[in-house]
Image: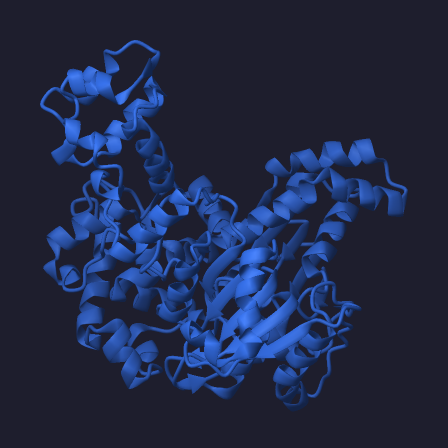
Length: 546
């Protein structure tokens, strides 16, 4: 096996390098023989799109003299190969050999009915089940991270701070162990789980794959963002590479920020201190931001005895260091006042990013400007709304004012209206009896499908979804100003969510909720700052700092 470690600072093209190696490999191997693994579904989809992009294929063929038509034909076969997360790959392999069901929200509902202890800290309706596993319910989060780190529950519990035990996990260790026993019994006992077969969560998928008697035959294995692999994921990667002729691992030790989920920055840094391929040319960060990032990470380089070569883009770029306590107080900091002008009057992209928790000052600041905002972090729940909410509200407003709609749209609008505004004759069955055509609100009033008050209630209160007043006012203002909520260029997310992304502007809140290890803070700061293509804005809302 030939192992190729690919290292490089942010924006130096590690994923692009893997893409080119993928094209090269298609000369010798079938697409189905090449496995590409990344750590998030979004990242895996981006790799797939990049490889399948005719523009990238054409560029590669011009540089190498390869047959473009043949390569396009081969890249279309990536649907037959695997470009996915490691969890999906492991699940597919287990299903082929043993079968099994994925632990779902219905399982959780059964579990909490059978065992009331799971109701002590229940999930809210705002959580998807994926969020529940990792963030929503303290037990699922705790046992998931423990297994990612390759530790039993007691061992992992002893690594936590007092604040984490009290504020994040809430249950005592005895309760957590009891729940874990009940959880394991539920997954394996059809009499309890109502006939479900071999129920698995995300950690089970990887662990069960590692226990399969046969190793898969993967001729070319590529692992992107390898620094994020947990303890059990590294075991799976070792099993996957057993029969590989080529094994690529791409990553950057300085961007290892998932230590809490089992990633090991120290081991990865040592492994990648002298990689086979070291990328040096930066395609993202301009000079000022490159210099700032190098200063942030310098201590780690010095302690581990290496210095990364990392050339910046030719543009100067800019660092703006604000002294504001909150973004709402911009008048106290003239240097930051230009941020408002850029937000309103340019087409540049922005990410407002932070370490953890609810970024209330960021959200309040952006909401006040009435600009389209997209929240990327699942954990930020104070300001979120489904796309359908906006669509329904826009359609409801014009519909309630008398504009005719197609039957399909009318059905969707009436389905979203709160029950108190629906008349006695409304039902899905009655709506299905209507012939295709266009209908206005007066038709449904006459039919007593809705009450006449809907024509006077041209606002969010008539629709059945529930938002807090702040979110409702924001949506109302956006719609009234006829702004396009799909034209997102302003985003809010925590630092972990934006890893691998890039933006014209990064607005980084240096505040941290609690003191953290020195190198953890430096890596978080490094990852956040290196997302910027033009300007890095530094603020500190309160308290401790990165």
